Amino acid sequence: MLLAPSLETSWGHPAIWEKLLSHYAQEAARLQIARIYADVPDQPLLVNTFSQVGFKPYTRQTIWRLTHINRTLQALPEKRARSVLIRPQHKEDEWNMRRLYERVTPLPVQHSEGVAQSDTEQSVKPLILDWWQSGNHQTYVLEQNGDIEGCILLGFGARGYWMRMLVDTLNPDVDAMASLLQYGLRVIHEINLSRRPIYVGVRDYHGGMAALLGEFGFAPFTDRARMVRYVHAWAREPVFQRLPALEKAVGKAIPTTYTFPRSSQNSPKVASILLGAYSSTSTTFCR
Image 1 (tube, helix red, strand yellow):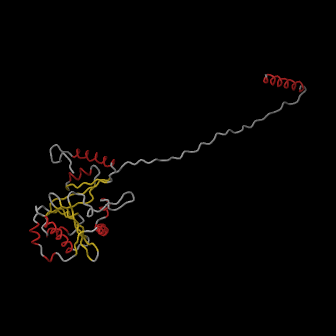
Image 2: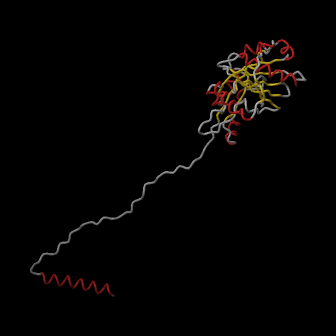
Image 3: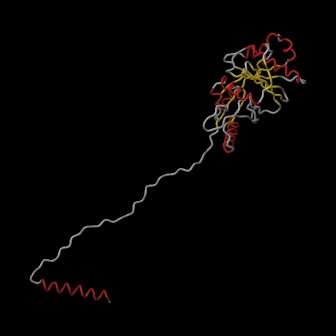
């Protein structure tokens, strides 16, 4: 939410931000957080500072702002919005809204936002279904022939209103987009007592929306870069290593030879001497 000191000040420096962000990444790993997101102004200094600590841009968007809603609604022709069914979103619409998101959103963006489920993590809801900002929100869908062709999320904040649209910008139906946008403006107009500004984010793959927003009185306000950093947590797993079995040491028999003495003339005498020595030894042993 806040990094201080600001890089625009004389005592601010990118190295301070890099140290803070690197330390937070370590804390995120300890808390088992899988991804860290940053929505920063699309300026080289800010984008490069976040890139130095592992963040990567996965999409860019232009924020459009409308300040005179009364003047816009009065200037809109009635034929611009045709009669289509626009109703509040129900719980059972989430499956079709997810399918619409997958059809119109590039796959790298889906992976970055955690919507495309992998084998190692749990899939999360698309942004059109998940409002994590402060304040209330309402979501309306545009239904044609039983299918959801578009939806719009209206977020009500303390300083303004946010409109998040999801339509098929690859095969745009300009009239349906205009009807959905005009419906959202009328809903805000009914409760816009303080005349707060209205903001719409248009990503770089949302073709055809810039001209439509210009027709409704919106003007470009700022450019943003959405960045993500994947947190790599340390994992400890036991590794089993096989040891060679120790063989029992078994001695081998050493062959030898024994040669009896040859017979000679003194053989009886020799035999008696040997026998006497054997007996003497034997007697001594027994004692």
